[in-house]
Amino acid sequence: MGMAGESQNWVLMVTAQTPTNIAVIKYWGKRDESLILPVNDSISVTLDPDHLCTTTTVAVSSSFQQDRMWLNGKEIPLSGGRYQNCLREIRNRASDVEDKKQGIRITKEDWGKLHLHIASYNNFPTAAGLASSAAGFACLVFALAKLMNVKEDESKLSAIARQGSGSACRSLYGGFVKWKMGREEDGNDSLAVQLVNEEHWDDLFIIIAVVSSRQKETSSTTGMRESVQTSLLLQHRAKEVVPKRILQMEEAIRNRDFASFAQLTCADSNQFHAVCLDTSPPIFYMNDTSHRIISIIEKWNRSEETPQVAYTFDAGPNAVLIARNRKTAASLIQRLLYYFPPNTDDLSSYIIGDKSILQDAGL
Ligand code: ADP
Ligand code: DP6
Ligand code: CO
Image 1 (cartoon, rainbow, N blue to C red):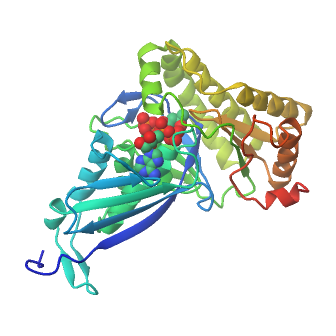
Image 2 (cartoon, rainbow, N blue to C red):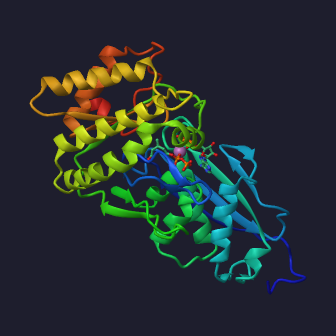
């Protein structure tokens, strides 16, 4: 380390922040569990980094005795294969790092021997169906790559983040992102590509209605494993439905065609939850409040010339509502407040997002 006999009193750290992403064409099912290779392509939108995001600090010091990690202030075991896979892939690609201020130089070989401390914090509910694993693993991989001076582009990092949590590979880019399922056995071509950046369709406005911030009973990993094993609808969806939808969704995004976008987004969310119901034993991620939100949006969209809001629900009861523009978003908030008056138990908090929308809604 060029540090033998020197003070142990040094620490090098990097902090990164990564937004979460919400799929509009869902990933649900793996063809390879350990590499995390999916049964179909998926498309997501990355949220604004100011609102739902993970902040992760990774630190290295010769005084650390073992790799350790804290999630939201609580220590969690790093023994899981997913964390180990990400750590190994990044360590294998580490380069020399020099810190002149502290007078240290860490070589490629040192990285294999030094231990890490990792502290991560989600500013939104963890394991509640708002894609915490996506923001979490993308941030972890990004922060580690920075610390260890890894010279790989985003697409390679996305393939590494994929091995932490599938949906994480899509969080390394902004805008609309596609995760290509890939064909190769080693998974090297199963990675994310940016379809368009965040400026392409910037009048969309996303509101998240938090129905419950409780941790879900069935993790995404377990849920999709059971669906792959038992749902015939999943097979049909992966082979016949999603490939066509991906093409239509790409076109809708390219043309900023909100009517097609909303139709595809809602249909895909509903089919994903139908697959959950088709799983044995059935999985219920949505609850009565989620169902009421769907009915309210469907009724609203049908009463207008063209759809105003798209809804999508991940593996949890919380609604992600995509309004065609800010004006529609303000009207959406008014409707939510009408149907779910504050201080009732149905909706614990209406939005995690740009709070200035409340002024537009006259609140
Ligand atoms: P979600 O719908 O929130 O993505 P999942 O069941 O897919 O729920 O994943 C939740 C798991 O992801 C957590 O139990 C934890 O293991 C991991 N995770 C969540 N946030 C982070 C984070 N910031 N850093 C590392 N891992 C995280
Ligand atoms: C419903 O990426 O959380 O949010 O790969 O097992 O970690 P693992 O699962 P995860 O699954 C996400 C499922 C989803 C849809 C999506 O994000 O595409
Ligand atoms: Co997840």
